[in-house]
Length: 145
Length: 163
Image (cartoon, rainbow over all chains, first blue to last red; front, side, top):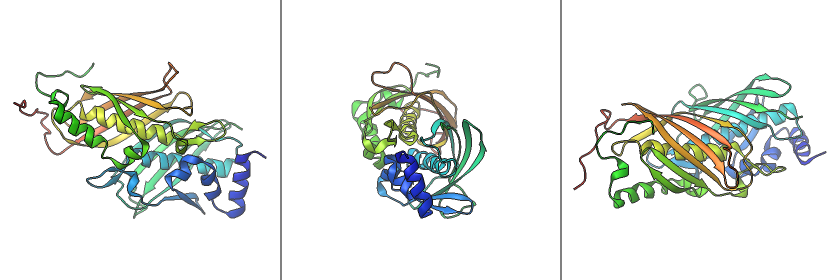
């Protein structure tokens, strides 16, 4: 059992993606958390002044938004595919629908298609109202099994 | 250089003190400071930005590959700066969208992004970026971003030349 499969097994045992987040330095450093819901993984990014990209509004940095959403998609793929390696991002396309303010953010994704080698994932980020996302993204990941 | 540059003063032509204000602003952005981003160089509609390696950027600990979010943050920051450098005066901008293609994994090293605003209209700017790493001649990623110009100066007129 490699480190990743061990983390996936622990995540399933605890019904939480947090053991996976703890095993991946970028995700741990961002300070994100996760929960397992009926629709899949839902992640939360607690507000942190250090994540601000526009001090005037203030609003989160666009790179934080993208990184948090990409991480959410990777967690979902690790959770459901149980691959022994981290999926590689092929491309990531992000639309900033409205500014993400200085407060907690949430993200969830939908695996639109999962093939043998490639997955297409749609991700949404919202803050107070799930129906009014701050950003939407789609990405392709290479799945090595 | 694809954008026509009319014979009017641009941000990049401003005296050194004004440019220092702009660089100061780049370093006032909390997340860019957390990442340790620095401006390696800039000219009209172009910027070169450096992201130092940090273990906190790793997304694949087994292979030491950086997480895509590290690249997204670098490309977003450099693209915004290139966009600002294409404007005739200081103006607020908002990112509409950003697309990144990953040609190869980013290794555990520093990363550099070179961005260029290649088309500017009265309301929108288009910026493309190439991301590379020291010791590698080939790009590791490409970015394409679209920015909206907000409020002031929608007519695209430049400021009076400083005297």
